[in-house]
Image (cartoon, rainbow, N blue to C red; front, top):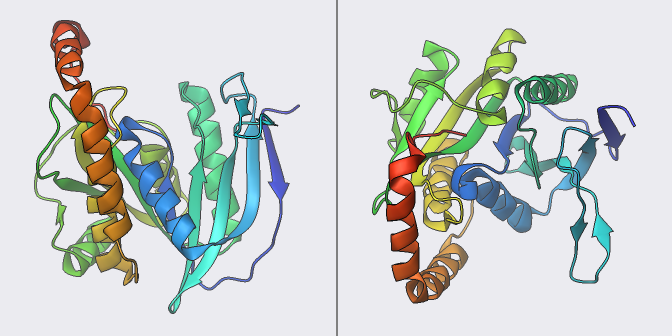
Length: 257
């Protein structure tokens, strides 16, 4: 098996599609947001990507059947806009593989006519933010100004961190080299490895609604947020102790990606 295997499923005809990336990362905020869009819009799969740079394991589903780790690109028309949704179970973690993977994605979406992208990620904080802020990083002054007009929920005038790690950042950089403009939306989220950033993903979806005029109802996420908070209350004391124990060893938790 080559390092990457791309299994083509459909060859859609699209007009200036916009890519929205949401792969696993801090709080899984991007993945939650894009998975929500997939559930709502039922997009058409374009291709599946398998790789030896993904974890050396398989997933066992509810039917006890094995599934390979996979990243998928979907297409869907929402209103007058064609969207490409990049979602999956994993992303490469080592530097060389991350570059190769991001290059592959950019090559694929460029062939589909993509000229604009929005990547989604989280920045880890030492505690769970009550009102998560979303910071923006753009590939040009022009698209930064354009996105600022479309949504007041993006903070462009403050530097929260110096780097965006993984595909969330590299897609923007490699895209820029290939004449694809883009913006990274990075939301504050609790930097604990077991934290599920439902509330933070909702904030990302609110901004996406503004930017793209998406007609989506976020009430279902509200129900999941309430349920997740109730389940967490039981183990909250243990979690707090764990975080305190880790805090002296964790160092900088402002990882982005």
